[in-house]
Length: 327
Image (cartoon, rainbow, N blue to C red; front, side, top):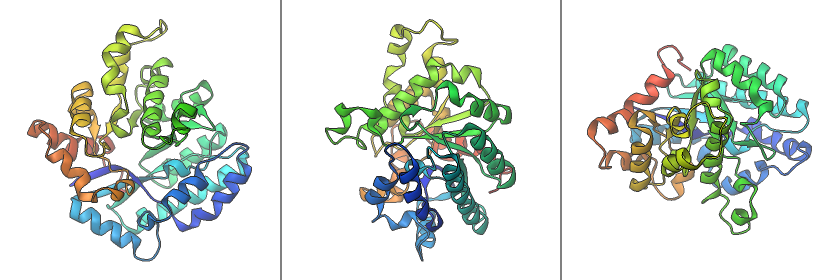
């Protein structure tokens, strides 16, 4: 059975927080826009019948478990009190769902960023008290990369714990009018956020400095699979502790590729099959394909049978060790 490491869930208890996050952010926030874009995707919610519908799709697709995250509706606010309240509501709601459906759902801890002390406290609560499977952060917080130095205490704590860290785009189109003014914030900007985040992690030597964090990058790593040789040859970064390609290959990447066999083959060749994890971006791709189809494209790829088996059924199970993390 498949473990889907990239799936989203928007509980009703969290919705009243969106107005507070937008009002108190002190900067533009994607929360309201994401809600507006996805309001027709009721299946990502806990409205009546939606969890049952989600589980039915999981069963049809051969998915044993989804690991849930909030992604572009993260509890980020300029005011610490607001961010903390939102994060606690979100994490408690996720815990309620995972406890009521044991073995079918796990979740990542959402942090009240950019408030480091509060985020450390919520991380510890989520991992120790709520039994969550790892931590999630957006690629940026109010247009600051989450690879920046101010976030180092979070990496130190996660490294000490050996936890999994799942990144997700903030849907800001890397703050570029070249992307956003042309209407490609989601279609291309998300992949560019993934790309930029990996570059930032490499520049700051995070994979070397914090080797016990199991970092997961979504969407096959954006452009990174095609850039490894060029990064090694051209990156003007004399302070690197390891070649860019080596650091990039130490990360994990999910298989959300919109059915592109070329992208999947490129990522597999660039990183190795053992670094790829099954992901769906549930329910975003439902607008173009069935949930089952999101995984069938991997089964139909020209990759070797043992590579397909590792990607779909082995890597995520080994990474999360759900025999000891049952929720």
